[in-house]
Image 1 (cartoon, helix red, strand yellow):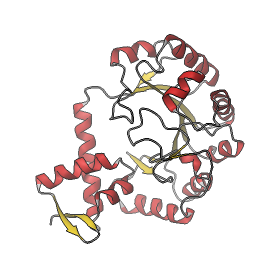
Image 2 (image 1 turned 60 degrees about the vertical axis):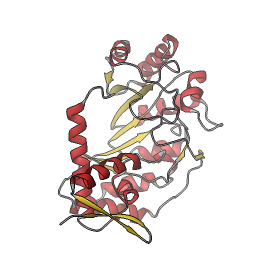
Image 3 (image 1 turned 135 degrees about the horizontal axis):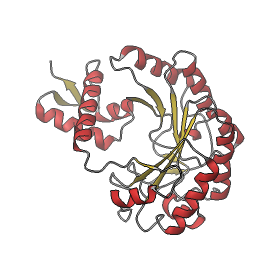
Image 4 (image 1 turned 60 degrees about the horizontal axis):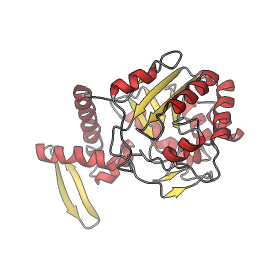
Length: 295
């Protein structure tokens, strides 16, 4: 159970990945700046972990964009550490780890999970569509430098797209990169949610399992295939969290999505089911459609 912390407005990112389930990047940037007051973020996290009945196992930075674009991320991580021992996870595309200040900011985290979808310049540009100043060789070196000094758990995620970054040369270069990096885990993923681009197609489970064997130790496949029971559990968990929020006050589905750090489309679908089941009712107000928990 992870508490998602979203410290970037949608959609500020250094990449505009063809497989992203959110949408194309509106603000393609490598400029780091402060987006929200640090104390407000820390107060929300503190309130969530103390008031909710479901205590998270992890506090995870992810969400609407690249979290390391927030120049305050180091302060926020250290602030969290001052009031809880819940492990902190940072899911990042790794594109800014060539900056010493970014590496320093993430040193206090317990888990850092950078992505490396391609270690080759041509494929990197096709799959991640990076901001123009970013160079894959500098990014690779930044991730490796971070790995040398980081004392927490460093895992690497690789997302493969059919015909884009899954060639033998691509896999070979990724194997070489991970051999130098020596992450605690290598996780293989593919396109499982509606992507930004229709041509971003998934690999099969069998293909991913075959590719996993090339890594030492063997990579793990984290893409979900035919996981109906897990999907049901996730949907039930979302419903429970939505009930928890609506029990406090009426909200729009955008409010709920922001609170839970889920894609708005996911929440809209779950809310529609809850309305149909009679657990929630919708009322159109002057400022929009609000959802109420039926008493």
